[in-house]
Length: 428
Image (cartoon, rainbow, N blue to C red; front, side, top):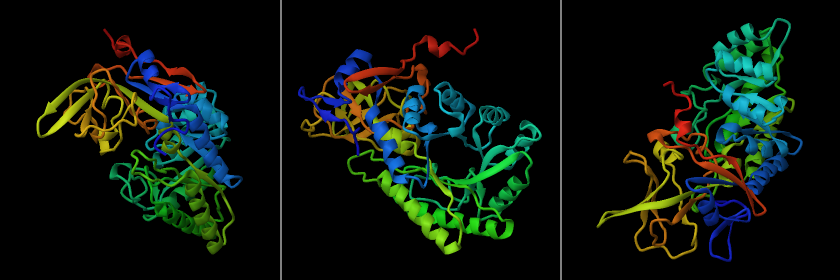
């Protein structure tokens, strides 16, 4: 699924999402502009929930996109929440997210992180030895904080090396292979401020081949069998992480949320039976696969530069400041003309370039677009995850506005930054 579920070409020949004409939205609100389809967010949440049924829990990974109004939609659909910083936690709480549905992950948590998680009543996912010391000094004597231990199962999935997290050589988690995972569980069980409720893992992101998840499940269950035999411990919850990929181009064919969940449940059930273990609650943590397909990015074309025999550059008013992914790890996208998405492509593909002062500020290489002039609006789908949350003010550029659309109504969920915002934290 490349476009949101409500996408269509309307009677004017324009791209439409949530009953809203994208060309009209760009003209009314300006560009760069991010537009989220509420129905797609809800339908993706429901796909995961339906697939999981009564077998476990679905948590949304806030780092994909965490605007307060977006989080309220996710909460209404019954998903829990993963956060990785005191900042994400603060936004979630202000959005009204139930604290007992929040899980605090991330490596090298600060004292503030752990203290805020404890104060809120969130569950802490321990990701390093230092966190045991923080728990001793933050959680009052006589209290125990609900915690999980993050495992590194030693599985490297088929994805970009920058977003693989489950292999031995990773900053995340306690390695099962090295024995640190067992030692961390032993320490958690002996810790007087820890209530150990589960084990957590995550092997990477933008994954299409689910065999890595099945392999990681088997490795984790081997450890659980060892823990049961030696320590008498079996976790209430077993987290398999997220990482399900999405389609960024029409050539991509990722598994569905149901295929993802059913693969994990199958690996869990067969593994439990083979090892004689009791059934824990399975936990999955999608982020990209919920937010990504729901969002599109809109840009306005400015200068057009032809280099005979080489390429045509079509420059837009955004770029790496609102979408760092192409520059960071070579992410690929497709581009469409909002006023004529089905138009005949020009004979020569174009390079959609950003306006930032970097030669590698390119959003889409070899885009097949109709001929266009300055002022045209380009739409890039699958833009809902890891774009606005990674956006910056590089080159002194304010970050874009964000809309959510439903039933022909658009509502602003994040205003466009102003030049005054750029100096709000400065001391003069």
